[in-house]
Image (tube, rainbow, N blue to C red):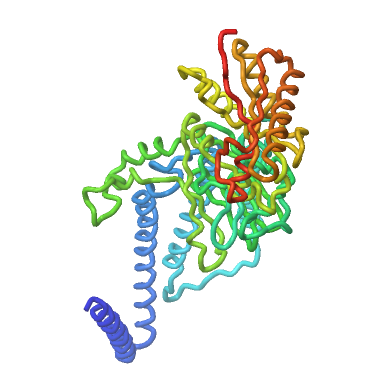
Length: 501
């Protein structure tokens, strides 16, 4: 119904215009072409002056009305350290171009009125005026020099890279149709190397080189978390077409170019919660976020910083939004410590893992803490000797009592614990699966337990605190009917058999 009404109004307006044209033609015939021309010229000149005033008033009034919705005004002050400089540069440019805008329009419409057709008046033609040429050449040139110089000063302040020794948090954003891959360095603080030839959408979307140890702890979060007042360096790149890394509230905008990495350095100065508090002071944000749920959260309560793509990179361009959380250092640390490396989740011990047969530093450290916790838990028991602690990372060559090199990490941890708790004695027991001869398994398990105690003796643990026992296949920990079960049965265990030596 509303659509039909709009169409009817448009048709009616067209009819009115046509009729006005016909009336004008009839009037010209009756009054004469000259008189009608003078009348139309005077009328147009006056109405153009009215339009000029109304237009300029509208421009100023609309800017004032919508200022709280524009970046740099009202609640949308910059949330980064450099953002104030960007806003100041914009305001300076707006001031000078605004003067030109107003004067140009005033002159344009004033000339249409002043030089309207007047009977008997003849225009004067002059081909050149040196003074006029100098004025409109020198004045704009001086203004441009000032604006460009001011812009260069801001550019040099905003765009320099970080000092190699500076304390900075670095992460990477890779754009593609139609999303962002975000990568953070893990505890080592370093992003691993990439090679586009290694990209595999199934398990290596960024082409990370897994032979580079720096890649082991890199992780790929779904949201961007950053600590407030921490300098951040963003590595920016793309896989397919031109994208743009745009954080409007931080005045950050940089192209993401395939094959040509770019960067941006900035320092966020307002947490997400602080920005929400600023928004809550303005009536336009004190409304329900969902108009259909008036009792739900207000608009300001659901505000989040966002990462967008500012290039028209395809029909799915709109979907490249990512949430950005600016939080306190404590909140960031908690979030950071909860992340797991992409390699650890998706690559470790697969066919793509170049370290498949090795223990990695993070595994050694994690196992060290785990073993210490197991020993401390056993020590608080009434009878610690009832607790068997599996030494998970003690390995032997097949059918041999020769320790593999990776066993040193686990056994060094045992030696360290025994040095710390120097009043305990332990029993090292060897176990096998049921493959082969039972008596041979007893002998092999005993030899392996002895090899462990000898290693600990070499590390300074006295032999009086160590006991080696071989149980062979007599105490299985799992079924012997599966490969995994038999592997679990081939083990070295430790018991605390006495305290207060």
